[in-house]
Each structure stands twice: as structure tokens, then as C-alpha cells.
Image 1 (cartoon, helix red, strand yellow):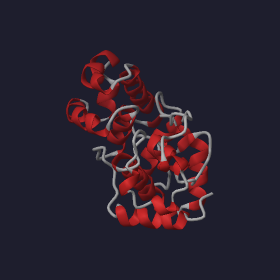
Image 2 (spheres, one colour):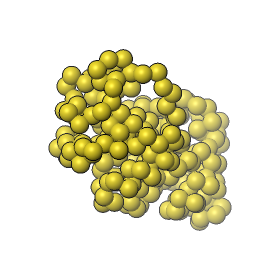
Image 3 (tube, one colour):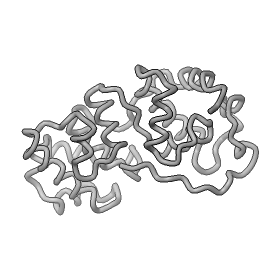
Image 4 (cartoon, rainbow, N blue to C red):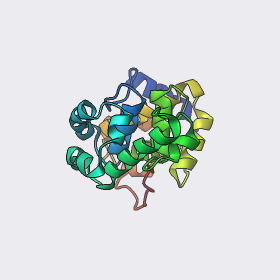
Length: 220
């Protein structure tokens, strides 16, 4: 564990004081749909697609009444053809089991088609303001490079981060790590020369090519 973790977190707070979701959504239904679409897709692309989706399918019931084939035409640029079926089937399940209201427990959310722990954590944190620490590929990568966790799975990294970050800071620190991963600590060619976390970063790759190591893909 990085002995300078407190300095790392303090610098992230300084760098990104207004960290917030870059996906656009305004309610639990929109949060769920946008987050499913964001798997292996950029937030920018999702934000280009969702205005038409939310206009034509404004709530869970409207989405449940369409078909995966129809929805696919709206979201095909987000990749992974199964996303449309997962969204429609998740909304049908929400109508059947939860009266059309998106559930707000980890167990209920991860029972929905296409919803893994990361997506469920995003919905809990940003639709219901329930403390959660979603681990996407950026959070996973930075946690390893900064030695905040060496967990081999996103679930283990989440567990480690929750143990060292105050619960009231989980959501914001999730976004700060993502912001830094997108802007500075890229997967390929990280910009270490201008990274103010370098004094606290033990990653050997900052002084040369990144060692060959497979990173588990954060689950949906």
C-alpha cells in the first residue's frame, strides 16, 4: 500500500475540486440506461445518443414496450449489440418485479440483465446518493499504478479503496481518479512529465515503458 496515499488523495482533491459525472442523466432510469451504454464506450458518444433515446423512450415503461431491434437503431454506435436487448429486458423486469421503479439495492440491480457490480454502483451512487465506489478501467488502472490496491479484480480494488477512502468521499474520489486517468494517466503513453502525482507514485512505468501486464476489464 502506498505510504503516500493521503498525499495522493489530497492532490486529487486539489486537481479536481468539482469532479462530477460526465454522462448526462437526470433520474434513476436515465442513469441505468446511460451507464449500460457506457460499457466499453466513451461518455461523449453515449451523450450523443441518449437525447433521442430519452425523448422517444422517456421512462421505464416506454422502454419496456419497445423491442431490442428498435432500440438497437438508436444505440448501435455505442457498440456491443447486446446492449439494446439488456436495456429493454432490464426495463421489462423492472416493470414486472418493481412496479416500474428502478431498484436501489446491489442485489436487485445486479439481477437485471446487463448490470454488473460497476453499473450497479454507479446507479446507487449517482441516482440514489447511496455511498458506493464504482471501479471502471480508469479507477482500476490508477489504483494499481498508485499502489492504492493490487487487487486482481475490480471487486477487490473496490474493497481496498473503500477501506482507505472516507465513505463520504467515495463518489467524488471515483470521479477524480477517472478524470486523472482520462486527462493525464492514460492507459497508453501516460503524461508523467506533467503529472503532479509523480512524487507520490511508485509505478515503475513512469520512468519508461509500462511493463507487460494484463489488466482485468472492469465488469459492467
